[in-house]
Image 1: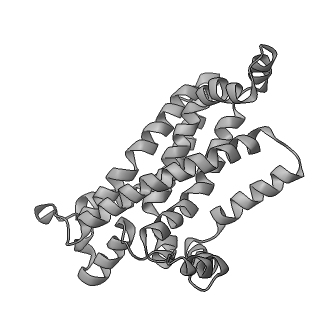
Image 2: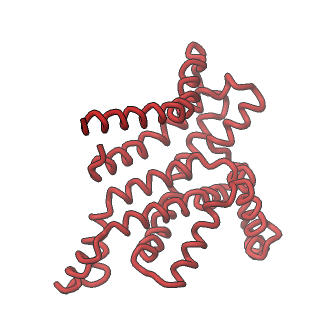
Image 3: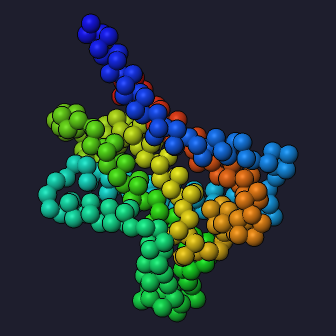
Length: 260
């Protein structure tokens, strides 16, 4: 009787879940059915956009991991008012709409800002060039990486770190030999999530670094110039370059956590 009751509850929850799952699945079914497979080819300039997104995206990811890992570790292991303020500093750009974030970057780093004027005296700028593109991607992905990596580090038991300290391991040794291996799967998910945000960032890049054009901006240009049928190939490639890694990492994390 208890088994039947549990099964009925599970079935009820499943059927209640179907509308939301179907709603999420519809766009991807539509993509498969509406793609003009007979005319499946890249539009002019799509190859360059792919190169820009992937190469500069890897540069942005290197900056994100190097800059974000210490912040994530500190937020995971330190308490107090200062760390709460730091967490708010991370959350504000994450929650800011991308178009608004792009406008803020123009105000902060553009040619008429204080940093922009200083750079112009050196013959440099941070608008519509590869450096601006990377900076826009960093702003798009860094907050997501820090929040996800903080969760990964938060799962490292403090007792193990204290045991390492008792055995004479220094702070760097505890971080490198204990914390990083134990948080590695969660950190891989953080990297994957940031990668999706970096390569797929549109709003910030559109405002702050329209040139060089990456895949999201090129999709917008193709849509405006040639219509919906001209973008399907690049949409497929954008999904191919962004989805497999996070899906794999999240499925591994689910298996490790024992969720069935």
